Image 1 (cartoon, rainbow, N blue to C red):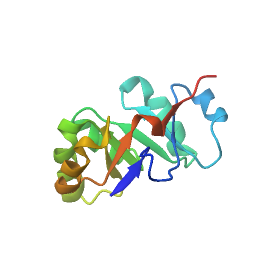
Image 2: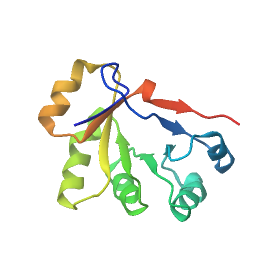
Image 3: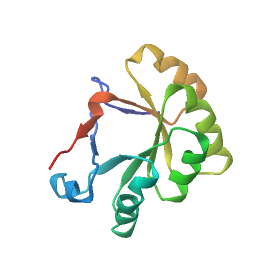
Image 4: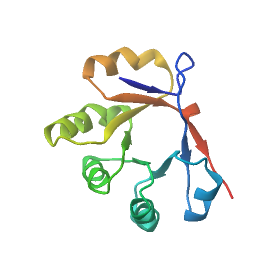
Length: 130
């Protein structure tokens, strides 16, 4: 299981962007993070075209499938969606890893038992503003 943002484990943060111009304010070879929505398709396509590593946040199983097909390295989901998203990822042999948002490690054991690829805590996501 991958752990991003847990105080016991060293990790590389994700950089939350809202515009293409904000990419220049992120470190080289970083993982960019954006919410999946139609308004962000231009940014997603830019990241694809430039072979940038990115994570997409999905709010339902349709978006999980879209995120995979768009080339996301990580697909972030809430706790309620995590198990279903993981099942879809395993069934369709995703390269992307499913990451579940957690507020604390109180539910970490549950996600371990469910076989979720990883978890991400809020401190692992750095908001970029230009």
